[in-house]
Structure formats: C-alpha cells, structure tokens
Length: 59
Image (cartoon, rainbow, N blue to C red):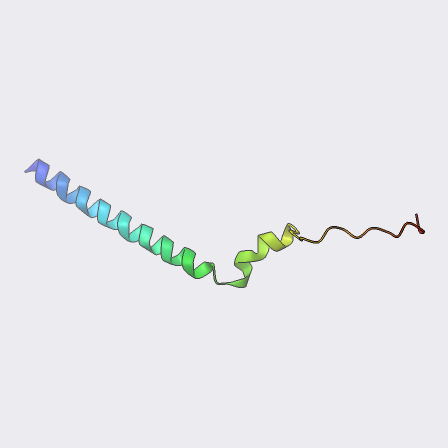
C-alpha cells in the first residue's frame, strides 16, 4: 500500500512539473513579442556602423 501511495504522489508531482514547464514555455513565447524584450540589446549599443572619424584636415 505504501508503494502505491508513493507512485501516486510521484505521478502528481510529475504532472505539476509538466504543467509548470508548459506555462513557462508559453510565457516565454508571449514575452518575445513585446518591445521591451529587445531592450537590453538596444541598451548595450549593438550598432553595426563603426564610429565616424574626423576628416584628416581637422586633426
């Protein structure tokens, strides 16, 4: 009888874990579409253009 109870509790625990993982995946997918999800890359200044130099006459 103790083995059945432990298997039942293990099944319940795995079910809750599966539901939790699915919710986190869904939330992660939803948050990717929002503008602030790309904010850290903008703050870091990942600009492909090199900094502009002064003309040779000015230096």
